[in-house]
Image 1 (cartoon, rainbow, N blue to C red):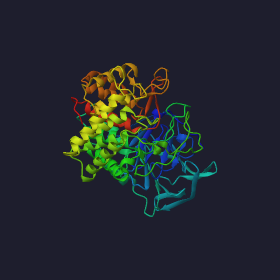
Image 2 (cartoon, rainbow, N blue to C red):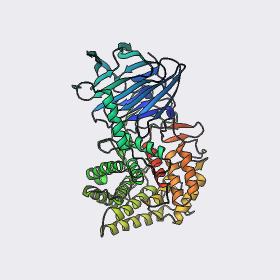
Image 3 (cartoon, one colour):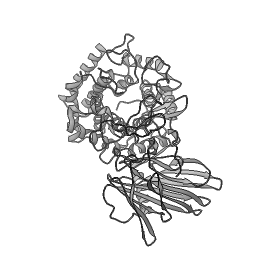
Image 4 (spheres, rainbow, N blue to C red):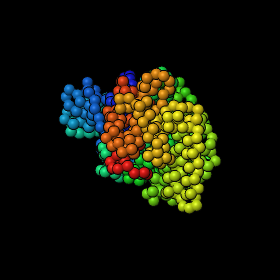
Length: 589
């Protein structure tokens, strides 16, 4: 069997349906898919060194390309061979069923016959559970293969009559050589279900039509924003990462390293409150209200359930994030394998403030119901009880009285006082915001007149740009201007922005440029009326994506490579928010 070596992250594409996502390499091998849902075990885990892959690859020498069909997460792998062009149209049937994966692949021969090699090596449990009970079914002209992988029921249908069972590492795999005549196409449909597949295989044409129509419904034109094509794609990525229950995962993957051999590997297949807020507020700014409504619903439910014990992250359906553990796989080169996340044991105060900011944005568009207004009260009461407690902060480090956390709570209270409640509660929330800002100023002001990270840490931090953007303090407050000036001088280089200094090493030596911070800086400059500089930062960071237009968390400026899990939702959210807000004069949300 062929060996599927990993690629640099910038070359991978994502297909997603809201309930799970698959990572597609330029060779046409799907190297990552968790089933049936985001947080479940992978059935294709080659991305992190496990077994399991689903490949459709040209049989002859080729160079690769690809693109998303506009306003969708339908990916077109495109290969140019010596004789012509072959394409493979790839999608997860959209929107996804919570317990049933339907993966569509259509091989298209453009101007010459397309010769491809197809391999389905399905291994549940991150490669530990091989395909079993494999059977072929022939009914008239329709062929299908069925089997089991772990607890999943498997069916592979379409143009699969030429497939045979082979052995790879003691496991059965399905393989075939397929020739598609020039000007024609052939379909492959893979279904994975938590329940037995009792119905007949679906018609591929009907699945494709439904998927196209539903993506069209999900994709507003966004003609009023800067860079509308990229903004629209960012919105589609966010939509693809958002489940039917409203929870949006931070990324589709786990264990992709932020810096080789330094142990910064995390599992981001969960819904962070903060990231969900960023996406919801970006959607509000762009007028993409269904995504805003999803975020409001998800976060309101979490506040009603957990109140002051709100945790930083949940599974996409609102469950608890499991404890972190290793998988005993090689991992992506430079990293190691793990699932779960230790964030489940943290308190992050700013999540309460961010929740209020989201509800305030929804309230400004008259999109709150009685339940979400009550959720705002729950969040405000929790802030009143807990704002003086140390927390892990936005970067999830050690517990301190982080300046950003406190000021974001003040921003959330101010926004909610305007848009989520009435007197006398609005005055009470505004007074609490004033008290938090005053206390923070007493304990976390740097001698130079800027904000500092915490009372015990005089350093700078990109997160300190956010409170003014979100309305904790005015744009013309001297502390706002001095913080921005110092940040530009000390934590930016060559058009890229960094979170904070880990040590005395040069910028870029400790970690990559943090793309979230570059877009936040664009918003901060826009707020100050520096339109040309804001546009320059937006454009510079907008270019730091991979070939398919996806962003990771960090960007290695020297090597021009993506670092970390893919795609990173909060970066796409900031692309969308910047595109919407830079299109006109600054106004508060």
